[in-house]
Every structure is written in C-alpha cells, then in structure tokens.
Length: 266
Image (cartoon, rainbow, N blue to C red):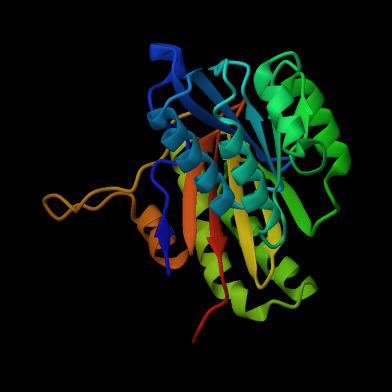
C-alpha cells in the first residue's frame, strides 16, 4: 500500500516561532535523522513527538538522534515515550537505533537509565557526542552515492546508477519503478533547485531507498488538480503513484527528497 508522508519535516508549533514543537532534519550522507523536541512536556507535545519519530521510522534511517535539551520535563514524565520509540526502532528490520541527548544531571536522564537505557536507549550529553558515537556504531550497509551537476546528463546518470546497483544486488524487479522514481526526483531537483545534487541509493530488504539531496531549502509539495488544462508537478505525481512512501526533510545545506520503492508486481 502506498503511503504519503506530508509533511514529515515539521510537526507541531515551530520552535523558532513559539518556542515549542518538534523539528526534524536529515543527514543524508550518514543516513541519520535528528529530532529536536522543545517546550513543556504535555499530551499534545507527546503526540507531536510520536508522529515525528513514526514518520522518521517510515523513512527507515540507520539511526534517529532525539535532542531533548530544549524539553521542559522536571518530573521525567516523558521517559516511557522515548523508551517506546527505542523499542519500536529495535524491532524494525533492519533495526533503527534511537539515542537521546540531554544533560545527564536532569531527572529524565536518571529515569531513562533506571529503565535500562544504557543498553537499549543510550543517553548522550550533547548532539555532537551522539553523532560521533552513532557514526562509529552504524553497520556497513549496501549504500551507493553519486554527486551530480544540475545538467541534462543528471537524469541519465541517476537511472544508470539504479541499473548498476540492481544488477549488483540482484534486484531486477526494482529496476523499472526505482528508475522511474529517481528520474523524476532528479529532474525535479534540476529544474527547481538548480544546484549540485547528491543521489543516494540504499538497499532495504527487497526494495530500495532513494534520496536526492540538493542545496535549495524549499520543500516540494504534491500539486493540486490541473487548472485550465495546465498541469505542473507531474514528476511528483509519478513519485506519489509509484513509490511505497516518499517525503522531504530539510538538511544543513538544503533539503533531501526521498522515496521507498518496492519490486514491480507485474
């Protein structure tokens, strides 16, 4: 079943505006998603955090780093939520590591450790420390990356990459849908972003995870119905119809648009 994730990149109230909410950014090179939770812990913030992390799980990164430095939770009431997220990631195939970042002197850090977080949900004092440790612990995976210039040859090279990895990974039934999706993602980036691109292809069991990173922070949206016979955004319509799931997230240098593609059933 096709799932649309819209929008997976910002949940709840924007932290930069209201000081409370959940913001998500992606490191496409490392395959790590960072989730920053800010504000007083409440039922609404719990829902926002759970929705954000759940959408990150659908994107199936290698790890999720949850930054809780901005969370106001003096009674450590949020501990079960982070524990549940860690267990959910651990049950995925392949597993998604979940780590949290907050000062170790806070009551929340102590409660997480009592729950057994040292083994299943590591607590780090800073996001930088978490990034370094996560990078060292991540397993080697089937992942190929190519850098492209925004020219007429970009789509051809991206499709060629799909053919090469599908042959190497013995996934012939993914060639057609993955080639179609990566073509539309790259073409969309060339036409609308016009910056240097990074295409990352990762094996996900019988399918492929595709990510196109560019330097334009403007996130794409699925276009509405055609007006006066004109229809723009056809590329995203193809992605929406072909991919199992797709979405977009901001990065430190722009954005990443990703899609999960499974084998052709025909």
